[in-house]
Length: 216
Image 1 (tube, rainbow, N blue to C red):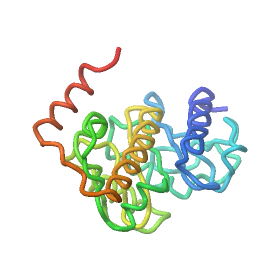
Image 2: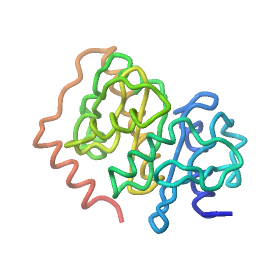
Image 3: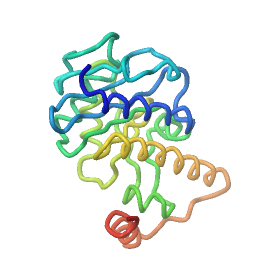
Image 4: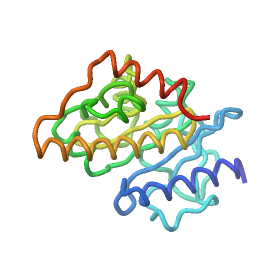
């Protein structure tokens, strides 16, 4: 079996999606690219999260061609692979339809940067891209277009949901979790009034500290 350790990692990370209320039923997926071989491990299509195992993960080439699989790959595979081809430093991609972030997506609105946590993690608002149909590379193309020129490694797409990227699959899952958490905070604040914006200069300072100083 190819890439047994990466299969295990991707399988384990899928469990974080329902645990953090990011998905319903079989929606959503995680993928990881192996830096050495360039091969991609991704969720099989339509399999319940509790039924996922390292063995039923699908291995594809970075062009989306099946290399090793007992099941059909996720319907988002072509878009994941497009993102990997265009973003060589990205080795993890996550897609969810998480509730609060998708509420912003169906309005075609970015998630504004009004919490220090967003400044830390995303260095600005989480941008909203346009609408694209599922199944080909078009969603991946929209993700690349939307993330171009911004600090955020996560975006939402109109009428669809969240796409998060990371240096590793775990980083991408973290970005997806933080996207939803902050979307929920902003949505709640909007019910109460108008959120207070953070000055751009302070967002820059927050992002620099978190990315370069925070942690071990």
